Length: 75
Image (tube, rainbow, N blue to C red; front, side):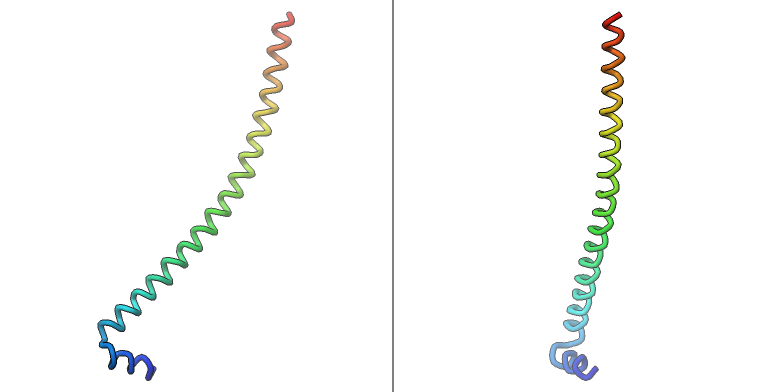
């Protein structure tokens, strides 16, 4: 506490408050970025796995359609 009072006495209240606010904003900003990055990476993994499942289903559907087309052509 004494150190804070010494800083206020040396630099003035407005400068110390400004630096404190900037530090708080810095911490909030980087905390938010880390949290958002983690959330996006989780969503990315989920959507990536869902996309792989959709790709497999589409390839199976494409094979079935090609088989039907071949059967219709051979009639």
